[in-house]
Image (cartoon, rainbow, N blue to C red; front, side, top):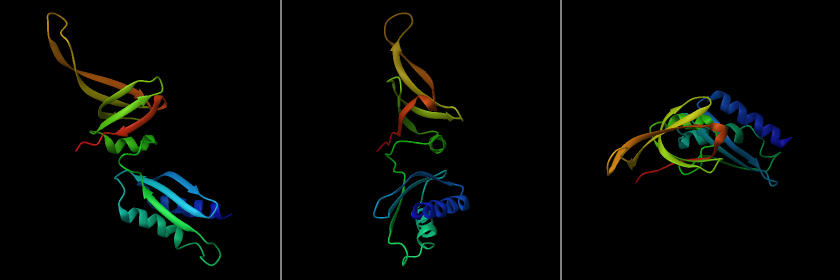
Length: 154
């Protein structure tokens, strides 16, 4: 009953803000609500406050004892949904695939089925001694991604 109420209020808030989307929702036994959101343009503190208030202000505190925590998906958190990749075009990603490949490169393209990474590598020259820098491109289907993280440069 309480969970359904929270889910409905959360969905109403997300319907009102189509730029925001749900990453995770949990409700513990002591009615501690935890919501993790992301946004097509990132997430501001005000966005978290909007979601929190949309739920908190519509539940009778006399009837239900609860706590609520709304968080943004952290910069170091793995990307979960295909929708999250679009805002990271131009950034470096580290992708682990289901077939145990580790790829790292610039995210250059995202579509409904896959992502495209591009990176430079040093390889032996086809003829003669020495190495040459080549551009490598990998297309990875979402269904083959085990984990993907944005590589943060300092």
